[in-house]
Image (cartoon, rainbow, N blue to C red; front, side):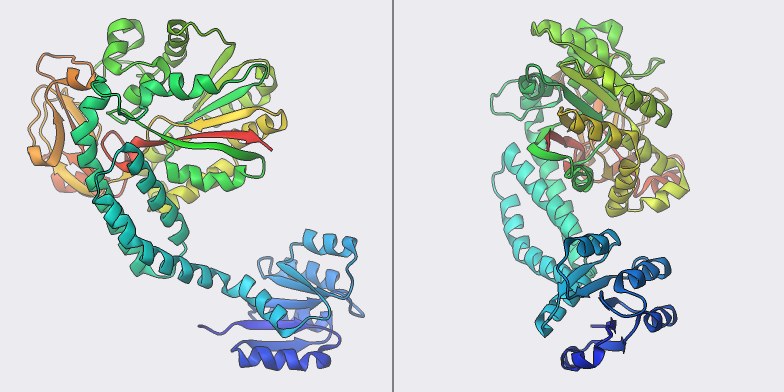
Length: 517
């Protein structure tokens, strides 16, 4: 363990020598001063990891010294020590951002605990998490080799995300490599599982199937609506389950989790297919057949999901549901602020749908813009960037407003994304779509072992623009690259976040119900 440097400031410092000796014997380096003025000089001239600060000193008081410390080194943790238990003193100290406080007389073990809480805690937690994951690694691995169903796979994915979040601050790079390998194995097995069962799920030939995109509104959202209570449905495009977990601590001050569910996206895991199916309550080929005015094929001009409001209205009509609702789409910061300013006008509705497009734009920007690629270089950084955006977004302000008004909120998305790593060669004609995780066209040339191929699109209820159209999907962390200029594009797209194919991250979709506190 590297040396921890501590400064102890107390006008009765001579009386604390037994404590100083105790901590020195534990391996800590301590400097001591008996007044606030000397303390500030020492802090300016030296690097300390922690300050113990007496509240009641002649000259500069502890509170005054604390204020000056925060000006000099705002992130330096300070533990306030006081004889007084007066609430006003404690409130003033806590308001000045102390790390902890102790009431005199203190004993050596109290001091040691304060150090471990504020200095050693990260390493202690990291070591404990590393050990716990190593113990569970074998258990997760054995579970994955069993005969898992769709609920079991949700459980595996939640465990892996939980460990990823616990270990993201680990100092042990070895255990992070082990976790990454286990995630890759999980995605390989999950892809095989989906490939084996997907046609039966989407075709309805079995009752034993997960809730998928086209069933979510009818089976999960509409039944949860309550009379005389407004519900806000936030559809945050491309929000992965781990990104939801990253933003939840911010929301936990305002909401409690009523349900944390996961549903399965249909294929392709893209907005045109998955989100249109979500709002229509229908699989894509049925939308194209029944509502051709609301379906735009990939080879046609125009936005592919511009009729979500109309499709949702048609779904309500089909099921004879009469509710007062609004549909709102946010594509820019300005439109987000405008919606935030008129949110009060929506409170009389039974349901308010708000589609928010930032995370998807972040994913695409990361592919195209070098600065974003550097800011979101891996999953941890991608989560961090999402959280930073969310904390400063109109979306967060809207959710807080909903909490203030006692409204329930549901957070979900249409698909996730995966950081791609392995290029797979494909050849297609000039009409082949550009998505890196799935392709459809008349003349696709590929190695069968590299893809999930669907020669007959009707089998998975996808439109067939041409009689010879087929679809192919990437599994795991693969991505399609054409042979022309192969090395350039393989390198350019590697480690970018893409969607459209089969992976845990793309297909397992958060569906979160929150109640205001």
